[in-house]
Image (cartoon, rainbow over all chains, first blue to last red; front, side):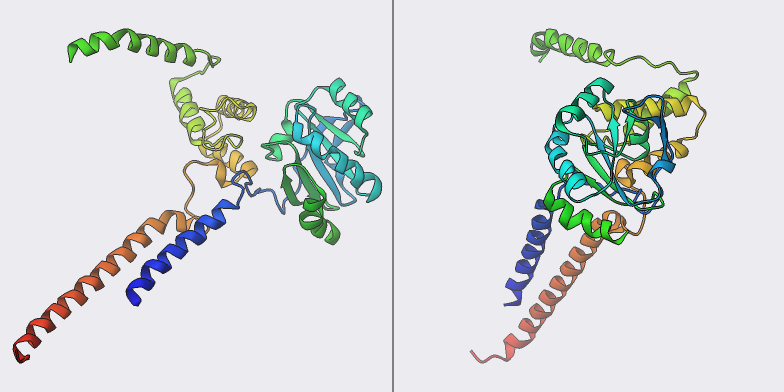
Length: 172
Length: 148
């Protein structure tokens, strides 16, 4: 009996490890920025090139910082949900327009609607580099002090919002 | 053997030419010293591209890899130490960006796991052998007493 139990236990251990591995997304890399203050920046506003946005503009209220671009298909997929959040749930969303073209980005917003309070225009990915962005869209949850409380990689959906971001957002 | 080589020679020539032309496809970077160039090459081979995760930023042609290579290059010219450049990357992308993970509490299983498996195997082997030796010894002691 014991002779059978040892290989069986080994087999079940391997199965358990493989099963967990199968359902984990290897693309999700834990961000070292969680719990830290958003990196300082000084970049043009997307709508108004004369206006410079800085970290100070993001302080004072909990908000979402959404990294997006018009070349990013997944950003198109989450856009409707961002509109829903901004209009129905009254969530403040700031955008980082990532390695994009200003006219294209403005065209996108006028055509599909603009869920953002303001957009940081980041054509060279400077702020995105400091934020450790590796695949748009990415969404950061920021508290009043500008601290990063949570980061989501990939398009936002109702399910992601309710299960992952909202519980964090409510506590801020 | 040499006939085979003669047949292969043109193919090898084409392949080596292709490899060379691919290498020159990248933009040549100017360095002040060869040491800087060596450091650049070794650094970009140690850093993982997070878009195509099994490639280093040296291998990958992804937009992010290009940007990170540019950052490494700029920091080397700027006179920053290798450790500073690595810290810069880890602060943004975490330990995952390193192909050679640091020894920490969370990575201990990664580093010591193989030894743990080896030790478990050796223990198992040791007890197996001891049990077998014991049962053999018992068998030889008992057998003469058994009435046939």
